[in-house]
Image (cartoon, rainbow, N blue to C red; front, side, top):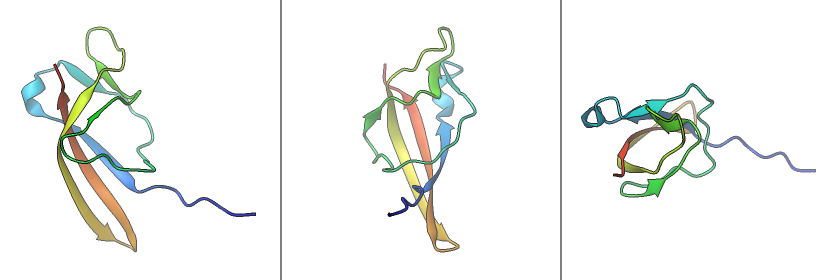
Length: 81
């Protein structure tokens, strides 16, 4: 029997230029694979502010740091429309 290690910790940040078009719901932020800059992704906790439905967002910046032996990331996203 093997145990799967949890993915890296990720803090999701909405780009200020979106001016309230996006909302980030409070959900756990562990990812198995952290998206790269330029990727277009959909996550259930990144939603349109008007409809509260998940929407495609583009990763505009990804910062990484290591502490306590495990990597952590800050991922800045912006609406892809």
